[in-house]
Length: 405
Image 1: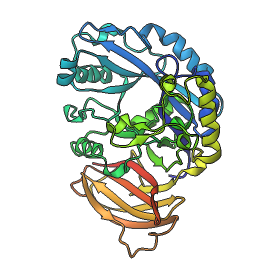
Image 2 (image 1 turned 45 degrees about the vertical axis):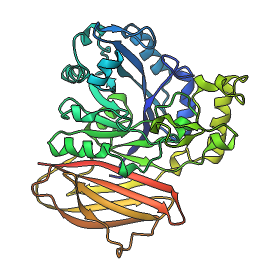
Image 3 (image 1 turned 135 degrees about the vertical axis):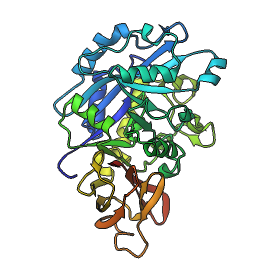
Image 4 (image 1 turned 90 degrees about the vertical axis):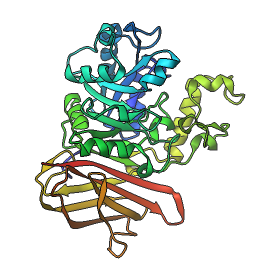
């Protein structure tokens, strides 16, 4: 695996929709976080059933100007790759029937996003399937915020996206969306898993995100998108001190978990609702948090764990092996000791690192095992490192599958 790794954020916003900054002026922020690329995914909302654009945010007619701004935001160190976050606008009753989805759509090189008429008289699932059939890359976002994934078989999709950041640090491997992923993979669909900050302001919101680490891809937009949808990647996540709280921001019920927890992260469009923030320039406030995050947070690439190897029969994430017994090699580096490691195949644990083996309790290691994959469709990796004295200080590595034929 160790030949090349490109780190990135697969879900970001600008002032083309509900983000604060222009596309090009965000690049220094994402570069300082250590991201080699970002997927720019501003909201593209379709009103249903008429198939016309909603009255706000990115329209199909904006695409040439939008892609030009993404090109202007690209530097030799950092690629800004254009796409959209496709959503449907509908009345409450239909929303109950159709389900709530947002899907990231990435056109082939040089192609526009579909005209709004493309979506007329299609349900959301039908629209996603039609987009995939037309050659667009389709990745369902917000899968851990109520999107009814049971309505997808998996054939309609290229990927799923999980969110893990300062707002939503629920234990990654305990989330129910992983079961939907396993269901789709077990059915034989090749569904990559990626991550994105959903950042609307390039401060700790974006800096705290689970990173998508693309393997052995050229630093080019099409190569990165191909790797993301093929699952030639892994996800890396770490903990983050709450710089918003440290700056004295008020707490509020967390919308991500419907108020079950308190968050101090406030989106820029709500600044005027809070006495501490309402009379200040939003850009100055975001700059303050950004500087605090770089100084006291864990936002840079070196703050994250690294998966140095995950090889199954000589193949890594996104690769294919035959149904036989295979040697598995795993190597990693973290900042806290290894707590658990397991291999999941067809939704079941097929190997779990026993407590007696040497790597447990270490912050880096390498080991080998043998796993029987006869009759299986895939195998994937989950690795958790954790401070023994503070469970909040946890790091995660989630490997995309090696497929079995």
